[in-house]
Length: 148
Image (cartoon, rainbow, N blue to C red; front, side):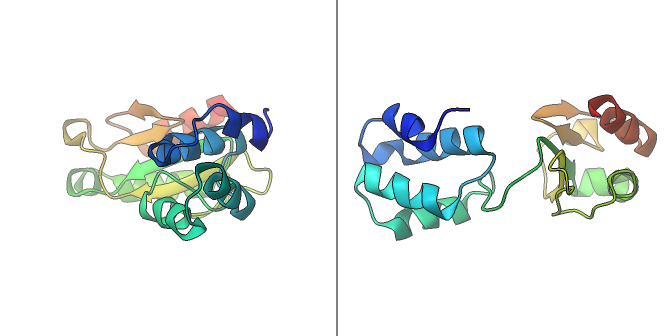
């Protein structure tokens, strides 16, 4: 895994690079630490508060270490009425964590998402950026088991 300095070096020192830089930092570290935010601010010559504002505004960024596998379950209306609650229960039971938590071994993180915009596929679950539609609780557990 590249260190923070090598990630910074790949980006021009322009404020317009903030989001791409943060995405790369997170891709390499799994989250954006306070040290990484300070380094990004220094590299781009912008206030740390600006970096923090962007990191906390966009739901794609994490301030705490996430699991190697990120599991997201849609909670939108279509997914909710088609069984998203049961999927969350099955995933939580299988991994022993609640939504918003990460397993102790940092293998899995689980979160609820408001809507993916894929209502025709409801209920939807996204694992490591791959979309799965018409998910059942059994299918969700099987997908998790395939990753272990």
